[in-house]
Length: 97
Image 1 (cartoon, rainbow, N blue to C red):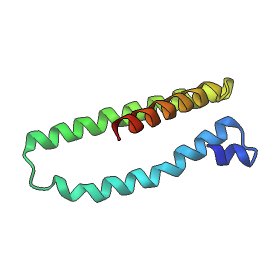
Image 2 (cartoon, rainbow, N blue to C red):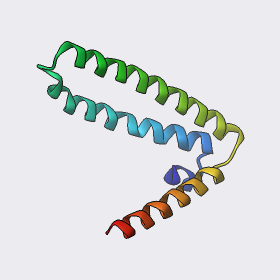
Image 3 (cartoon, helix red, strand yellow):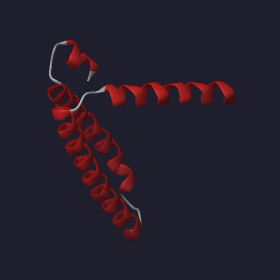
């Protein structure tokens, strides 16, 4: 998103580009993990399928929300979240180390 904003895309276009850029990577990761599903019990495959559906719906809804938000809002709340999460993660890893 930062690169998209850096080349003067709108917030919505930068977000759409970032989400579209990630789609082939997610698909490739799913294809690489597919062979591990062969030979699993039917109940496990059913749970994996349900998980795929739920995660797909959640990803669609969150992407739809973010794209709608970027039409009207700005990225400052997201930036504050990133700074906070980054600082907490840094403190956590420095304490654990």
